[in-house]
Image 1 (cartoon, rainbow, N blue to C red):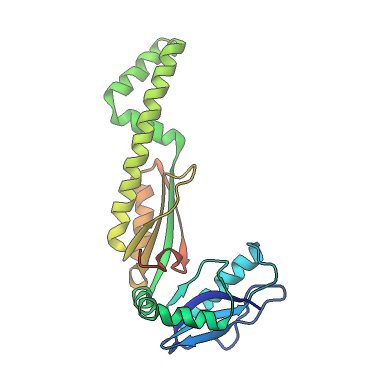
Image 2 (image 1 turned 30 degrees about the vertical axis):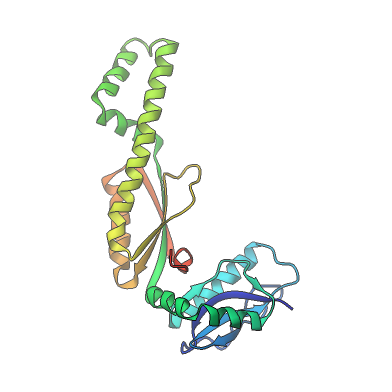
Length: 239
């Protein structure tokens, strides 16, 4: 049977005696050792799909294991032919994995997503551009303006909002990066002007969360959503 891999920890780390993994019923988690490292593994289910139950079980294994020390988390779906293959990979990349564990020790990932409050950002771009504001007021005085004037004005506003998205994305990263040990930009997706992951030392957790709250308080047109603490999936490699 193939081997499913959850994460990598130091061999000296005290792990829970019993951890339940993915599968129905949940498969027991064991360790594969090589040098100063252990991999947290279980048998792989015959049919491996990204079901909510198994996604949560995968993360639960990592969270339980990292209570006593850092864990290098693997993404869901990592399968190896057998335990011996896992051990060989641990040996091949032994020093690099140890280095990453040292970097992750005492640190968690926080994901920050942001978008614009539609009405508030329109007000913000008009307030920041006297010419755009004057054109808006002239159109209103003329009963909204002609169809062509409305289209032209809409295009100007759209460009201004797009520029503001880039500015605010940079502002968020600049405000939070000094409070983190690392930053990763996530994939761009519709509706988000920023999708950033931060590696935050636990001693700076409250400072980081306070800075997130301050972003919305100072910039009311920006809506910020923070998720964490999370296993540091975005920082598992050396970047």
